[in-house]
Image (cartoon, rainbow, N blue to C red; front, side, top):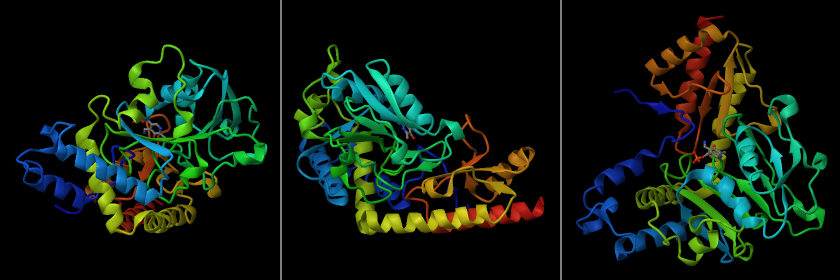
Length: 364
Ligand code: PMP
């Protein structure tokens, strides 16, 4: 079989070495006689896996001791509710920046629990840019400010971190970092809380990671279910209930792969090179079009359209015959989307670019 390059937005491509190791260890993990799937989450074998996942994550990002790391299930979508339930801390409103489909979902859910102040929005240009912070209007009484560093559907990424110190408040910054997590270095001390579904750069679906500054925990909204209380999970080292053990194990293998490959700084470098290769090609032809403002283009998710949408089907079919799969754009926007996460090698992007040039010249 020729090489397949998988451009899915998530669940997405994982490093082949990770899958091979999981295969080799599937029936018998390290001589334990058990698959990781068959282990008690409280047994010494799985406890050692969980401890290593946490230690490696702390090391790779540089997470100080006053931040708790929670390994949960429920997807990033559950966090849309858990964030207000845990972080309102007696306040009545929260501020949100609206840069697209995922921001909108977070906002819609937060509205069930508090007044939402929209600090800024790029809806005026169909969510194709990041509104600069000097135009934001943040409610000074808001409990926190929430934004989406990378809009997976729109392909819009912040290349800067909002600076709340300018407001002279201790308002925590909260981010849905699902689709850019582990793709570049991250100064966690700038955030009160970040959350991410694992199924892009971190592992399989079913695992959600939350990293939260300890002092923000302990006050939940009345009626908050036990399972939605961060402090319960923090106090129990994510073992209040059964955590998603197998996805945590795979995430652990991904972290080992990241460490072997130079960590987040090295990932960022190659991710910049991959994105440049694709965007440079998109910009040299009018056969394809990427709607996102150049300064705010995502390094992870590259949406583009063909000049003539009636060619979409032929494009996808021919791409597939060349081993380039899952390029169809999100159902809400159409067109194409190439997601080029950490596990997508530069050769995969080069193969896509080559095919796209050829397709364009054959249909000019
Ligand atoms: N936020 C972002 C930025 C996402 O990309 C996604 C999933 N694609 C979600 C939230 C929802 O995640 P989940 O399906 O894990 O609930």
